[in-house]
Amino acid sequence: MSDSGGEPAGRQKYRRVYDILRERLERGDYPVGSALPTEDELCLEHGASRYTLREAVRLLERQGFVQKRRRAGTRVLAHEPNNIFRHASGTRSELLDFVNGTTIDFAPARLIQTDGRLARLLGCDEMRSWHLLEGIRIDAADRRPIGVVQVYVDADRAALQGEVDVGHQA
Image (cartoon, rainbow, N blue to C red; front, side, top):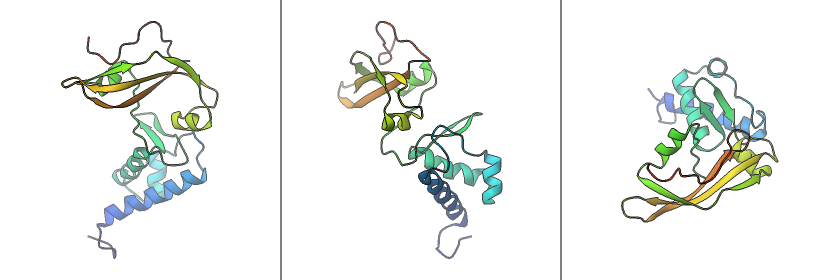
């Protein structure tokens, strides 16, 4: 089944929900750091299925507006799209999965404080302390650079002591 635009009705529905939520995010209706309404609330408001809503939220997450966490809801990260790749890791093993098959040659960690833009990117208050690890991600097989990596570790949650080796297999 399709609508008058020639696209499947389901596709149009998730795009409409996405457009509405994106507009609200860009207007600042949902403050950075706050949670979006629950899936149930948004499904009811938009007359949408969970699948449709999840597709809309997936697009918002891909663009850096929100971060969805299982059993923790969807948190607002920004009021504008982010054109960088973001990989959020909650555990050391998740971080190691990200670097599987690669190494990262890190420079020494630095303690920094967030300004407005970085605070929005990280979804935290301004002037919050973070450990910044910067390095070059390298393919383990041919030792060619893949990209530049910036890792932010919340200083209130984790202290970095001595050498930090998350880029090499043990």
